[in-house]
Image: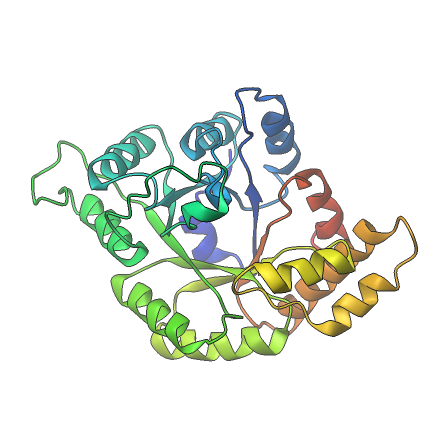
Length: 297
């Protein structure tokens, strides 16, 4: 059985998590295959919640699969799709079934997803969601009513060290830290210096919070250029784009894996932050290759 993530955060020198995306449908064969492959190789599997506003199998359902197979799950909750009543009910259900970690997110805009006529909720934002989880942890609901059995979630959130401009992002991160979180999983970072500057800010605000650098392998120069042009908060340096462009034909994936592993090695060797969060959506089976190349397996 996996060690509780809260305990891992306190005791492990370098923490590794990986993202697990639920399928678009009810066929659980691929998620189960990925869970079995990764559950003993990373400290927790972070299950996305309708990522990029694309409707999928629920995060909570996939987290239960992780739990049932002996892994440690991090439940993602966005504020986009549920009001405070539904969020509290889902969190209480998750806690009652052994899911002890929650990642609090505002959620992507509906416009980028596949249900563009859906009505976004945003009853709360991510900072308010963090406060909500603390309220459940205290044994009360958001209305101040006593609960017959509360919760004790380990609370995480996200940050974007490469945001441009960075100042509004740091203001929001400060609010999240003041609300109280146990860990931060950042969006993708490719520039160690950007991550170092972000960590200087975080450490001045909270010396104890654990920060895991987001690692998203890029497998081609065109993919990198597309991300730079279309994904807010992503900045792939020209040197990496050039390296990918010069990769031999058919070697894009292996080159992207080596670049990701190189970043992980630098983060670990220079102790820039407390670990990494690997996001290789749709190619989860390649995560062990990244870990091996980075010297973590």
